[in-house]
Amino acid sequence: KLLSNLAEKQDRSARFRTIISLILDGKEKQFEGICPGKIIDRKKGTHGFGYDPVFIPNGSAKTFAEMEQAEKAIFSHRRKATDKLVTFLNNLI
Image 1 (cartoon, rainbow, N blue to C red):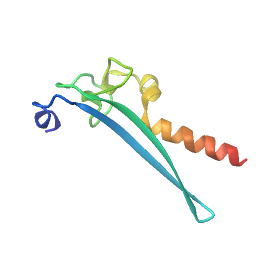
Image 2: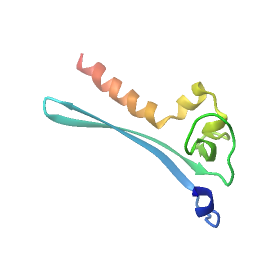
Image 3: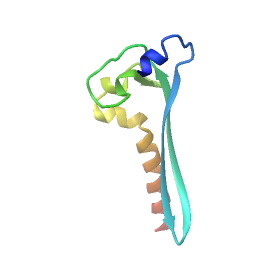
Image 4: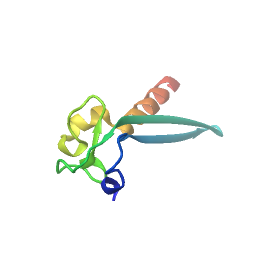
């Protein structure tokens, strides 16, 4: 349905976004990870799930579904948010 909804659109920019929330001592801290990219006009690749076959992150020529896990992790919005959380926690020690 996504591809049919975007069929006539010129701007196919998109992004994946993750927010991880942590509450310490009653205070909330949020860690955001964003992966900007674009939606292509047809599915490519067999890995992943969801929108992976139609999403190409900025800085790549491949969809997430065409990437091996290690390559996908370089662009991952989840990893970016998790890395920020880990850095924050390490600074508490």
